Structures are given as C-alpha cells and as structure tokens.
Image 1 (cartoon, each protein chain N blue to C red):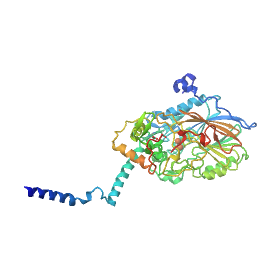
Image 2 (cartoon, protein in one colour):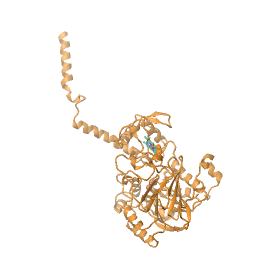
Image 3 (cartoon, rainbow over the protein chains, first blue to last red):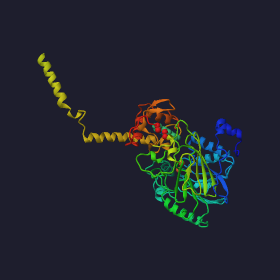
Image 4 (cartoon, chains in turn brown, red):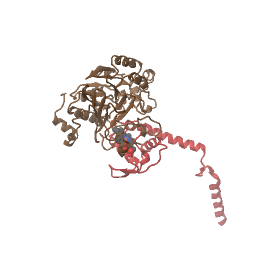
Length: 359
Length: 135
Ligand SMILES: [Fe+2]
Ligand SMILES: [Fe+2]
C-alpha cells in the first residue's frame, strides 16, 4: 500500500471540487497570552466501527467515513503534529476488522496515537490490539505538554470472565449500547495508581492532556456515557492546573468543565448518536454548557459525523474545530481567563438554531 | 305458521340475550386485560429483538444508531418529511432506514415485523405527548 495520496486521487475520492473547497484547510491557531509556550495542532479521528459482513466485505457506509477522515487530515494545512485515534476502530473486535482499519489508516502521512475502545477490547481483552496496534495505556511528551492515554473501558472481573459462554458473546453484549445486561466502564485501580505515579514527576502547572475512550465523568449510565470510577480519576487530576481530557465513544459533540479539568468529545466517522436527553424514560446528566450538534439528516449518511482538530497553546488555552460533514464546521474556544470552553457562534442560548434542539 | 314464526323470534331473542353474556363488548374482565397486555408485551419484545438484529443485508441493526429507539420520534407522525416531499407515516421512515443504512428490502406495511417494530418504538416513547407534524 502506497503511503499518502496525491491531490488528484484525493479529488477523485472525495467526489467533487466543491467538496475540496469546503475542506478544513488552515485551522486557525489560537494563542491567548501564551507567549512562552509553543502552539501546536493535532487531529482527532474516532469511532470508525468498521464492520465485517463476511470475508472481505465490510459495511460501505462506515468504511467511507474513515477513508474520508484520513484524506482530509492528510490535507490539513499546516499539517497537524500527529493524529489521535480515539477508539472503536472495529465493531466486534475481530482481527479482520482491526486489520482493515490499519490498512485504511496506513494512508495517514502522520504519526498516530492510539486509544482503545470497548469494541476493540472485549473479544480478546486487548491482546491483538497490543500485538498489532499499541499498548493499552502509556504517556508521552510533546512540545511541553504531557499526554496520558488510558484504557478507560475496563469493567469488573466477574462480568468479564465469568458471565458469558464465549468471548464472541461477551463482545456482542458489550457492543450493544442500550444493553440492560451491560457493565459500567472503569479505569480501575492498577491504572489509577500508574496514572498517579506518572503525573507525580510534573509540576502543578504543567499542561496535561488525558486521552480516554469513555468520558471521565458521568453523563448517562444506561449507554455507558460513563466511567464508574470517574471521581477517583478526577481526584488524581485535581491538583494540576491545566488538564484537558479528550474522549470518543459518545459519537457527538459533548463538552464539560469540572473545576479546572475540561472534557471534550468529537464525532464518530461512522454514525451519530442521539443525546441522552432524547431518551424520555431515564434522567440524564448531559452537561448544560454543551451546545448540541444539529439533528442528523438520515438522507445524508455522512451527516453529523466527522473528525476534529485541536490547537493547543501550552495546554492553557485551546481551540477545537469540529469538521462536521454535511454541516457547517463549529469551533469551541477556551481562553486562560474563561471559566469553561465556549462555542464561538452558538454558546448563548438566544443564538441557537432549531436543529440544535433535541428531544 | 304465524305461531311458528313468533316462536322462532322468541328463541332467537333468548339466544342473543342469554347464551353468550361474556361476549358483550363492554364487559371485559381483569383477566382479559392481563391477557391483552401480555399479547402486546409479546409483540413489543419481538420488536425489541428485531430492532437489535440485522434486518438488512449488511450486519447493521437499528439499535446501533437508535439506542432505546431514541431519535425515532413516533409521537411526531404522520409528519412532513422534507426529503420525501410529503406527509408520511412512521412506517415509511422505518422502511427508509431498512433500505438505506441496513441495505435491506422494505417490509410490507402490514407485515407482523413492521407492527412489532412499531410496538417497540412506541413503547420506548411511552408517556411522551403526541405531537403530530412536529419536526
Ligand atoms: Fe463508538
Ligand atoms: Fe465506544
């Protein structure tokens, strides 16, 4: 497989020149009062859910989503320093699905940092992922920012080891989002201890980015928009002044601020999920500050999916760009003085538009 | 002959009045209610199963995009669907999703599977006010 693609292939694969004109080229760098710190950009692609039908047949719709994200990220100008893949590359954790994903992502001309999702994990408990893709948790430093990646999708041992007749059945059970037999995600003690130790070398104002698959706060338990030991993880992060958490799993724009920790999720490349406010039978804790993405148009299969670009200025301020296909892009900004991130266009309630109302 | 006719009418009236008193439309029992609810629950559960299985040709199921049948909005139908250009029923949208994201064949509008899907979708939305036409 050839690395990268040329512009002609790109135009051909994205279809029209018009598509190329609306490309998210030239993400604006934001650096409020961050003279000392370096500014850089990374891209975020998540929740591809590549689904094997049979043999080498995969669901076309979901393949298209990931392929499009790869093409567009390759054409970011200036290019990002690296790409984070936020988890759920596969649908049922199969080797064939993970291999298929790696084949598509190989076309990225940039380094990739990997986060594991529950759809990648519950068939073989991360074995193939560790062999072929990446360790399950690790940390790295980039231009003065400390990045930590966690496997936040673990759950209790009894559910994992004793409950199901086969690994395939366990995977199917975990793959069903609205499963009453499901089990809540956890980081668990071993990783929490490791995290604490990993951060202990840093000064309190060192910028930190945490990459997880599930939100490290509690939104909606019935769909596992939830990490059961979120409070314990937040307690470890609390002493640090500049912490941003990026996560996948929720397949939607979702952001929150708890104390000095900001939380942010991007869209899936495969399909959007309803906001939990749309389930009338169970109360939810969807953060009040999130401006919802537009309700999806089912006649446009790429609507409400996409990818993200993040500009970090020393971790103290940021701009998140949501590259929503079939929709206007949105931007979220946080300044060092700001209490919480704000959508640049729609944050005030009176500025919102009808498609942002979900029910 | 006349006597015979009167006799016949009397017998007929007697039969109507007394022979099947429990068949009267307004006289169902608690047991009837239980049976009918069980019948509904059975179909609803069948719908839940269908909603969570690959009804088309590509291994994709409804719940992948509509957990707990959210964003199906049964209370808003019939309504104007801008992409179809007219007022349509919930069943039309169920079929639309079977044909497109699931790459399958549409169900007949009176297919028991269609009724089951509707039973599940509306049950997950129970208690929400009817809002026909709402987008
Ligand atoms: Fe996902
Ligand atoms: Fe997930």
